[in-house]
Length: 300
Length: 302
Image (cartoon, rainbow over all chains, first blue to last red; front, side):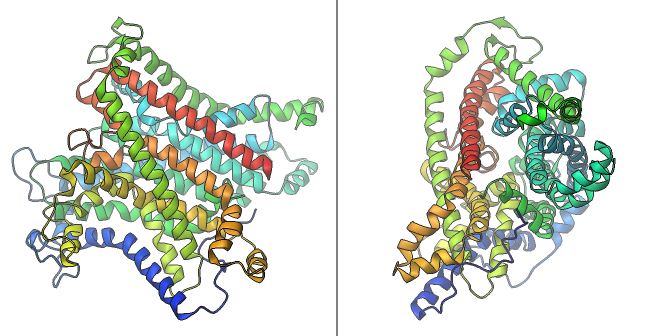
């Protein structure tokens, strides 16, 4: 199957000229769609760019007359104005948390591309007795709720002393990233033509040699897609980070900040916007690969 | 496949290579999934001390008895079902509507399609935070909007009312998942051959008939997959509700995952929490087996 992009191909419908009524209905639909997606995001962005006074005003405007970058400055420099009793200062912890999120996500991407990539290639090209069952098990584990097995992780990590370290997350996130990576890459390898490998084999190349020299370069789009999806899952994960660490990564830090009594929504909004930028940007850049790989195993 | 196994030493060497390549992944999954699952089941049969340092007293199925006779549990099951049904139905329908809309030709379509990515790429927890404050009773944008449009007279505290809190939690989760469904369904729509439409048009089929007789049957495999994925996400949902309501007000939005979290880490009844986890895990596993069946039947039919 060829790569698809939902953003390029011409559509099947809508070739004929429309009546005025149809056009009006279509553009009304588009307007509703745009508002549905953008209004909450717009509200968040606006909140991060105005003062608490502007936000609390009962004549709150979706188009503020003046904006400020103070909220961003305060979360970046560590003075979020939450000096009250029981408050945690998010500012001093946001940049370290972003760093930890990047660290955990990147380690997982590299680790899973190697481990899951090898397994996916084997499942696609070198089936062995029981490989089919292994593949089905991989798919089935995608649905085991992470929450159902958190208890033993918590106890085991406390015993070996990795609670509240990035390693707790690097280890436990494999529960869901590994099966995802295997599925995505297996689907991708299945679509690659086998002729090149046959030719390499005839030329006397070993199996591992063939994989490293011939397959890896042509499989790049699939590996990129898998990498992006692993990063996305690791970046977004909240529950394990909440339980196994003390607000180490961005999502659990944001949740912790929100639960504090004295805090400031404008500052939280600025931190939230910053937490959304890496994943959204990543998907925007690689959307062709990612959408193609998501639909490869699905749309028939 | 079967012939390759009976092909002598080369085939055996191929299979051996495949096993070696899969070994690390297989071992990791066994260690990270089977052992914790087994331990959770063992915990569920014990009265585990709050610090989890030992299994504690063996109590057989007592924990399960407590669960199945508890109103809190059944109330949580009910909330989970309501949340899941609302989430699955709305995500699938909105996703389909978006895909159909974005498959039309209009000015700025590329940009509109790009918007689908934003909710999908946003972390679930962030979606919860975003919607909590959007719907907030004192600073919320939703209130400003409703008052501005004259729909409500004054600011409402939506999240402190049990019904509107659940509705808003569903809405926030649907906001994300419908976009994901829309992306998959739109990709499916784009593989639909234009000739099918033209033939239907020549036959005088109207828009509704074309949708029903051409588009939906063509999308069926994608629709099935999207629906199953939505069901799975519904049962696993934790982040959005945790951020928006923490299960409240009262127990109005306390889905099973929130209840398990509370049992394990707030009131630290590890045995009871583990038994709940086993119940949810079994329900999800059954869902998973159905997923596998459905996905592979789709493949076989191809």
